[in-house]
Length: 274
Ligand code: ADP
Ligand code: MG
Image 1 (tube, rainbow, N blue to C red):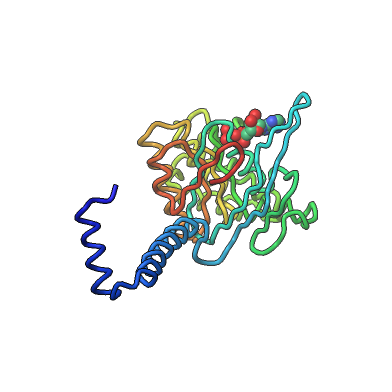
Image 2: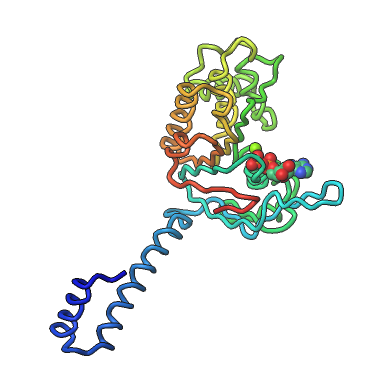
């Protein structure tokens, strides 16, 4: 409801600034409104337009599963641009499609339709060898439940991604130890996974993800199985790696504190990225 005093003020303004010209007055007000609206929209969509070189983009990305005749749109027409060195968080309730999206972007799974390009190269146009090399060298993946090989020790676990490349044993071991140093767990190289704490296992898994010096690290709820303090430490590790090497980090998390460390936060709802 417009108050009487506001009406009087408007009347006075009309008389003084616009010499009683109501059209000019209305034009000015609506321009103001439009400007502020446009500005707000710009700010919001600005969160979808990262600054810097785009390293990963998805266009109309869709993954549909058919189970018992029912179609599930796990990922539904997602468009996304992510810049080099960015830390991006993806939040959303269970079943909203976060893991499926990460698997598509990382080449672990194939989309039903849509396009993904990495560093300007389309994933779908890659040969099997190129796509294996992409998964092995351009990206690293960190899982909630670590997925370490139980019968291999810490260093051997980190050496696994290097085994697909021609490399002499001593070089492979050196690279593994360097990666373990980056995540501050190099004093446990002879331990088996079961001899480690959850936080230590996740450090090893991160070392394995970054041993090939990837451009992008995907982390699917990497702190989901850890206590608050350990989770924060794991996030510190990811953040440091991103800062030091300009590695892009895309992290799925339920924890708002973890997400708040990202430059941008996306929300997934029913397969759609908001
Ligand atoms: P989130 O990681 O957000 O919990 P997911 O990506 O795992 O969600 O799953 C998204 C939706 O897709 C869910 O409804 C899930 O049941 C379904 N889904 C995931 N993987 C498969 C699959 N292999 N076959 C059929 N449905 C699947
Ligand atoms: Mg998931």
